Length: 235
Image (cartoon, rainbow, N blue to C red; front, top):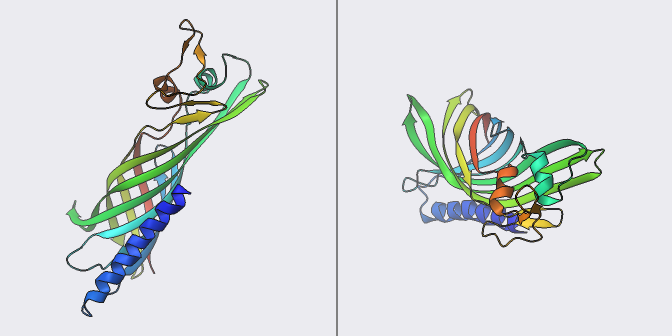
């Protein structure tokens, strides 16, 4: 539900602002739209699609971009994940996989960077849902660890015109996500350590695990470096 509201609110901002700007004077140009698809490194294999709006007028030279993406990443340490979220068993062969689904909203400010006049400084808020899947073959244990996080990102994008309606893009930067509650099995660990059913650490006098232990074991998004190639299409 919250994800739907975010997407709806950003879409209203883009289209509503453009309608107001265009209605102020007939000299204003209507909004222009570009669609894009990117793939590359985002602390793992990342795929992203987005819609960009431009032409808001001289008083607002930035472009606005709404994007969604999926990243396949290492979910963390399987042995520690079981100890912290289920029990202290050690049997079974661990298998694991992880993914992060993100929504990003960017302001793209045109700049001349490294001799490229079609470059942009990109920054804006982020929202991510993370899922790490852990399976212990012959150990009869399977569980997921999930979290939801807000973040911010900054980067640079270069665009290289190929045809009238097609451009190659190179994007790189860094996203940072704030700590989120980690939930798995019937246990959760929160940044304020208001934890639910924390397991005991049998290696340290059965002291209950804390959030820092869970966050160290689980590879939820935190610092997410990006280096991606993509194509931009004029609509």
